[in-house]
Amino acid sequence: MDINLWNPGQLDFGAILLTAFLLGLVHGITPDEHTWPITFSYAIGGYSTRAGLRAGLMFSLAFTAQRALGSELAWLGLSDWMNLPQMDYALYILIGVLMALGGLLMARQQAARPQMNFGAERNEASSANALSPPQRWARWMPAIHGFVAGWGFGAFALILYGTLAPAMPSAAWGWVPGALFGLGTAVVQASAGAVFGRMAAQRQLTPDAVRAIALITAKRTLFFGGAAYAVAGLFGLIFPQWADISLATGLHVHNLAHLGIPFLLAVGVVLGVGFSSLIFETRRWRQHAQTAHISTCG
Image (cartoon, rainbow, N blue to C red; front, top):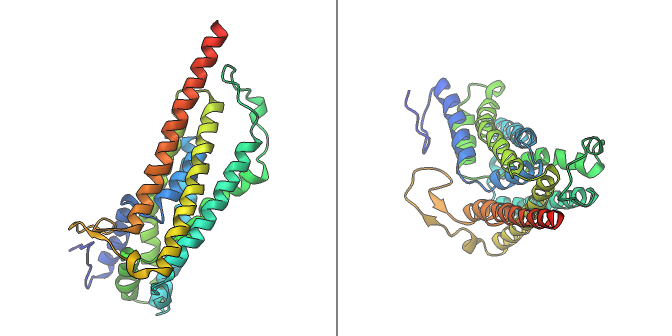
């Protein structure tokens, strides 16, 4: 079975299904502006491995549902509108608005927390309250993001909708390549969500401090990431000839073959905002904890 993930040609039924799943894995692993920033933001905001896994699963399963729907539309010959030149840039603006809304929910959740006591242990009973409305909405935002972000149209979508889905034997099978592609992405993004959630939890600080750091990091990533997405979308709509400029790397790996605005969004939001906030806030809280400890001992 000859599998070519760079430019699949005529494939038999089994090869199509395997190619779709493997492409989904590559899509989940490589820096993608429609996956990594969103998964990171909500997984960090969950401040636990379990919550991070849940955020990654919710995002990627909603993404899978969209890709299955898009794949079926492609088999029916109704997917051409997704490849409109301005589609991706308009989607950036919508994603930016949703990210900003997610950041607002995180900010409200942070404001609802009582002031932290650096020298005190967490009271388990006080944290057993039911989820507030901002928290409930924040739990569902990854799924909304996943379904919306799935409509992005890039190299992976071109292969999925232009080659794999139309090769299915009937409409009953048209959705399957998209579903397998989404599941391949889900394997990676759910795992990444768990890792990000664990990163937030493993700060060697009190549980209250971990929560505060996680919520601040998630809030900043969503706010500033949302602004970056919206600006990129507006720039692409106004100056499409400039927005499409990219640097060829020579790598035959989609998402890494050309580095442009999508790559900058993915890496800039996660590394530039997310990880920097996580590191800075961790150091700040450790300094506060040391100062509080010295004051108490003195």
